[in-house]
Image (cartoon, rainbow, N blue to C red; front, side):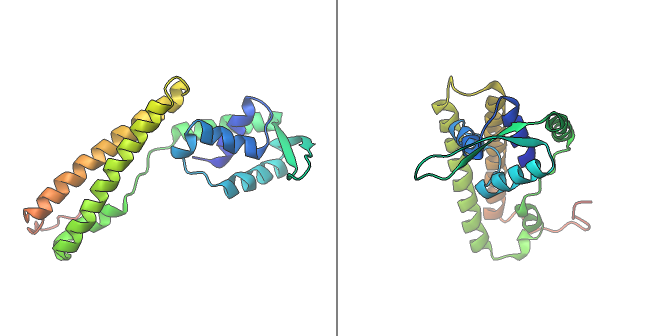
Length: 187
């Protein structure tokens, strides 16, 4: 997801400083659903300001604390927000798991090491599901419908991934990956 889209979207609801934006994302668990680094947030704020999509409203000075610059979205920023939003909605999903290229050639790898790694991946997927289910449960009543859809989607994807990993592990354990069909690479 575009960091600029997130910033402009947050400013659509009112003026904010970057720390407040970060706090909002953390408070609502959105930081668990989209990759967003603190540095990229501040960098993107600077870019949006230079592009005149946002403007400084005020600088809050507090003793013994860094200044807080509060930003507002401009009319041009509202148009940019619409463009970014529609672009994000229109994007085709492109999901490439590094596991895919390894699975194709698994039959040539060290079986015990592959089994160990697959067990680790299964443990991670199981923990991810538990984490997401706990997060949505803890935020019950404080989560917006769009964020709820994102959590449910993440949970369902993780459950599907877990099922596939378990099937792959089962086939690896039972030596069902060692047969070769001519031209079996995906086309």
